[in-house]
Image 1 (cartoon, rainbow, N blue to C red):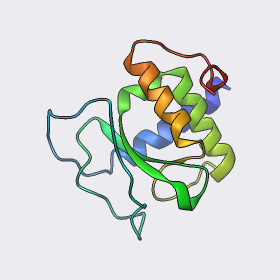
Image 2: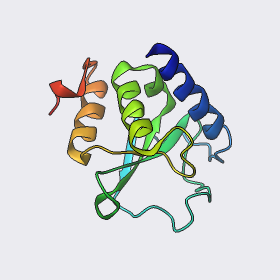
Image 3: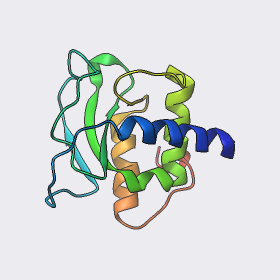
Image 4: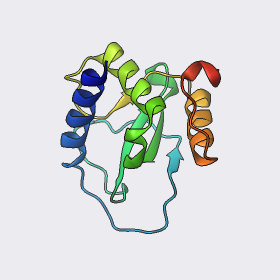
Length: 127
């Protein structure tokens, strides 16, 4: 499982290294916007600050929200669990935007928990 997580993180970091960013210090660990993914998911958006990456969260295409999250989250076990869910749902060769198939409210709970200094060991604690 650790090797799988390392592989996921390496692939994600390669993808993230190709994301164009704007420099800004006005960002927290999380930003979200209730918008649909871009029509062409391979196009890069310029509103992602350095050290962050976009992720689309939702159980289906009709209820998806875009979040901008800190790359620091990649070292958190709970976020690795989310990446594993994404890999199970969409495969390791997923192209375009990173999607995580989880309820938006649960994802917001994960982020809020991390922001408050708690590091939940699994999603079951937050559901």
